[in-house]
Length: 176
Length: 152
Image (tube, rainbow over all chains, first blue to last red; front, side):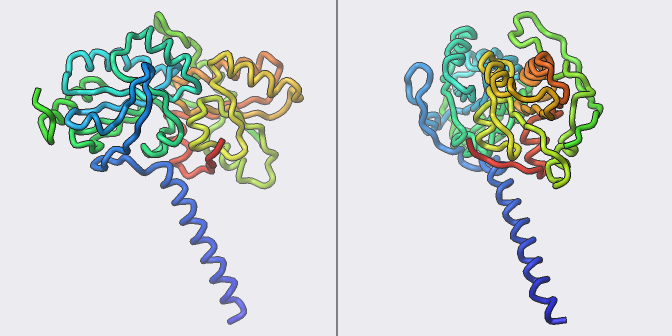
């Protein structure tokens, strides 16, 4: 009987290690930037050469949109974001394109007359935001820099407008 | 691996004026789709011959997570993607088992899989399947616990 004990224990330990490793790998892709957490800081040059520092937007509600030029749901919501940016002085929208190259992003930016900063992101930034494993993904970040909502897929503008209004009423938002 | 026909509930999409990508995944014949669970089972099975897997979405997605063994080809809707895919497969036997997948966006909005499928079909490939990803790669593959790896 004792001869079987060690192999069985080894098998159980190995299986447990496998489950932990598998969970850990998945967790690395799916956790992060959960509501209530401080949004991961980053500093990127936008298409116009200006630096985007996330921390500079404290005091405003930040809508952070991961998108790509060829992504149809992204193309649907961007005109709505342009309008939101026009009508909400205490809202700042920032676009992070995940296109493979910058060239089509410039074309799109000019064609759509985008009125908010856009930069091209990479996998490192995507991972820090919990993994961007589909597009679009949109975060609403409150005036204290904490993630409030993570929208996966095309947003519903009335819903987002309501969320922005609610965030502007709370926290340490700058007076209009 | 054996890839059998499946059915899928794919939403019909009506192209709009000014739409730069009128091709949609919904245009891929239903008989050419493979469901995630079926592909995952085939990949796990030691007995099944493995198909060539091409990710035809975007590089940032591929670097974060992709199906083990799959190769990245640029977005199927882009001229670069079409050229890279053509060059990659042109010397292969036309009965080679190939699975295309993207997962960039909800199925009915994916602009990439239909042009890539059409390209291979037009080149005479007879054993091409397209992975049906209803929502996105994260929701329908990664979060289901199917195998993934990261890297270039």
